[in-house]
Length: 84
Image (cartoon, rainbow, N blue to C red; front, side):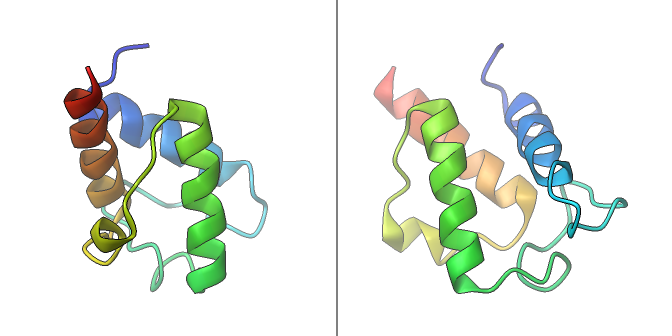
């Protein structure tokens, strides 16, 4: 798998859709808290799952800027690129 923002977004969407409580009509523009109804604990748990899948760690200060699935994918892409 390549690590483009689009590929990471797709992987995040697939992971989210494994949860039956997540709406089926989500997109990379879906807002994690507002549209998916994730509370702060759910966001942290989900980000930890994605971090494990991609073998990265998102600094807590960067989490504050993440609103949408695409924001998360962009952040993860940047972190992976910095590690390369």
